[in-house]
Image (cartoon, rainbow, N blue to C red):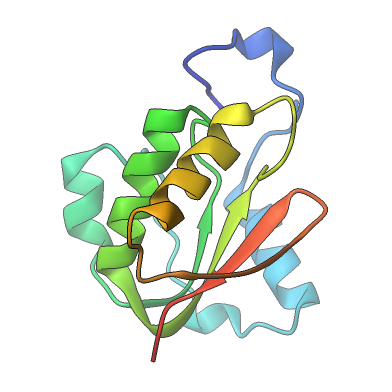
Length: 131
């Protein structure tokens, strides 16, 4: 389940368990070769997880704790592990239920980020890293 620091778990709007099987099934539906996918389960604030993840990544999806500070930290880390030309997706951008997401991304971009905002669809923001 998603865990957000400012909101009790019972009011999490997703209400959906996140499983590796679901992630891999969704990737297959998008014609992604799941043999090339590395999935690491844990929290992005865990130093052991960060060390295990390594780099670089061609696609990074940020769907973290939804707080301004948590998203800001994820964006900083993302810039250090993203490959040139990588696509970065920020979940819940513009969702009024999670204002910290847009606040963190907008601030990050305003302060000299290497990432380029490409647009938003529904509540997902799409960015790219320079090549």
